[in-house]
Amino acid sequence: MISIKQLNERDIELCCELDSKTISLWSKKQWANEFKKDGTKIFGLLIKNFVIGICVFQVVLDEAQINYFVVNQKFRKKGFGSYFMSYLIKRFEKLNLRKLLLEVSESNVTADRFYSRFDFYNVGIRKNYYSDGSHALLKEKKLRTK
Ligand SMILES: CC(C)(COP(=O)(O)OP(=O)(O)OC[C@H]1O[C@@H](n2cnc3c(N)ncnc32)[C@H](O)[C@@H]1OP(=O)(O)O)[C@@H](O)C(=O)NCCC(=O)NCCS
Figure (cartoon, rainbow, N blue to C red):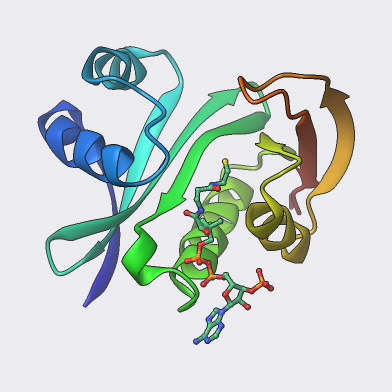
């Protein structure tokens, strides 16, 4: 059974585990900081009690910035990422947020295509942003507010 729930500091080991198996972005200390940041929320996509996806986002005024979005490698290309993103978009729209922002490496073709399907548009570029020299694409999606 698939479910989505807000994670808290007690779930930090699960976050570190999925991160280390996927994009290895943050240390345990950095994850702990994310849980403490003002306006930041961490949601998990679960099958039974197993976390297969994580999204970290920060709400500032009427915008949400997605700082982390990952699905476990073994569960990709099965629609789970889309299910998770659709859920989050609906949630943001209910909160009357206007915009969704994120950044992704220009070399991450899979993620770029994934976000395009959700009508994220390029609004800027940070040159040589990543350690491999690739540029970061800044993307934005307009949300449907009531
Ligand atoms: C980007 C990411 C989250 C997508 O997650 P996902 O679970 O694979 O997403 P989906 O399965 O919903 O969609 C991925 C593709 O699989 C396809 N797909 C979905 N269900 C499918 C199925 N049953 N059979 C075949 N293909 C399928 C989708 O059409 C989509 O194709 P497209 O993007 O080429 O149009 C995932 O690849 C990931 O975690 N990447 C590493 C982290 C990352 O790059 N994050 C973003 C940067 S911040």
